[in-house]
Image 1 (cartoon, helix red, strand yellow):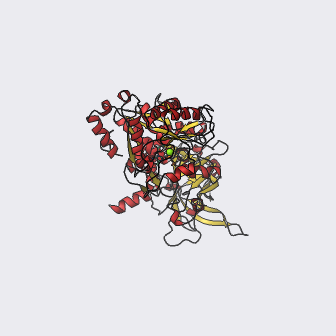
Image 2 (cartoon, protein in one colour):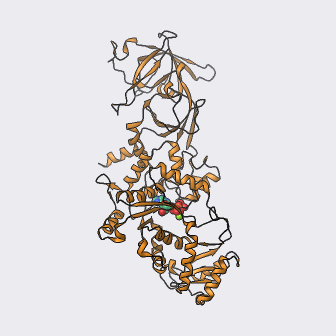
Image 3 (tube, protein in one colour):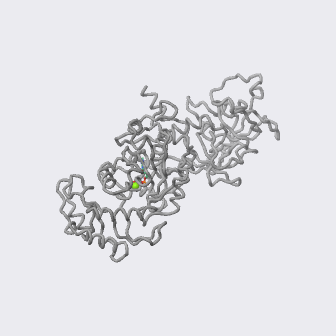
Length: 568
Ligand code: ATP
Ligand code: MG
């Protein structure tokens, strides 16, 4: 959804809404809904739908409902309902008092079914599920009428009422719409409206043993809530004639509620991940990840825990737009949106992820200087902070090489670097573990005049490194993430095996002894930082004062911005 002015989105759905408002359809009302099935946690694809539905309502002075589509009793759970509410709120949207459950309408849906029977538009069918399938025909072959299709209205009413009363076994009978077994659209070949199923429902308990099908419950739920624009994903395009049929053939006070219109848009697909709830649930249940909110998951709770901000996700949803054709969006765009957001907001701090100890031999033992460091060069109001400098420090292991190639501009024997916001140091000597050759520590000297304001402050050296004072450092765990899958399209069957075989074994690296500047000791879970040269980080929910834990959200290398530049 691209925005040209403050609040009017530009997309084909907005155009439809604009026209409807201009022609006074539904008295000019705009009422949308976000209808999740509570059978899993929401993912970034749902975020697109949430931003679209709530966004269209907001932009057009309308309303958007949250509706749980809980017509399928065996799978739904209260945990999912709660997580969905939390995620929609966190994204920044509000349904006010308009939270509904499709199960709230079971009684009315039943009454509408009785109406359809009375109008001669529905019948009870005793064919088995296999028979129904074989009578249905194929794309090239017409279907065949069920032998029960012409039951009398009285018999249908009696049987349907007894279905509800629990007189028949699960699966032994269904209620079907009487439409057209020769329709070129398979969805219109007398679709099933109700099935018998003895399953406990999370809200209605054991009250019902017949449950309505989605294609029947959904349009009527929309109608009962006076929805005007029922936005859904493309795979429902073939169901639209049935949606309209249901609306047209029941008597639901359309003069009060208006008439909902179904509009389809392309679902969001992202590379290097999967988005189907079934697959995400499998990853959780079979412990491929640590839960729905594992920071590698494309779920909203996973992205939140990883450190994604609601602003960056909304920005992403706006930039990807709303199309009528499916495509795959590059995950680098999502990362780009996060960087754009945090670049202005996240304080810069120093953190050494893989520490190498250095001793400044000519710095007085026991001395500590509190040096001034900039909090965010991108934000003039961010101010400065004091960081301690002392004789023993840590730098990044990769900022030193014993035997460097020509273009290595960091520390090496006899070479100098500047320590960020501090002094220039020179490596004088290295101490190794004699047994395995590992470098234990470096001995350095510093140039006391090279501090900012000093005599040699302007002296140029090629490299600048981040560092932390050993005595003051906060020890922390840092978790570095990579794509959850190694393949760009893990769903792609052509690439052979099951998507689970394409999981990235290196999707999480845990660094257990990182050293952070002391100001980070009490950073609260969810707070964001840029670790200089390392990326954007967020305090994990696992974090405590005893053991701080930081997630790397993204590195600083913006592959998306690079691609964009290359295209210009
Ligand atoms: P799945 O197929 O993964 O089970 P779903 O579509 O059944 O997902 P619902 O809970 O029914 O999940 O979805 C709620 C709303 O979110 C629907 O309107 C659906 O169209 C929309 N939605 C789901 N996935 C996406 C996606 N990838 N992109 C955009 N919208 C989506
Ligand atoms: Mg669904």
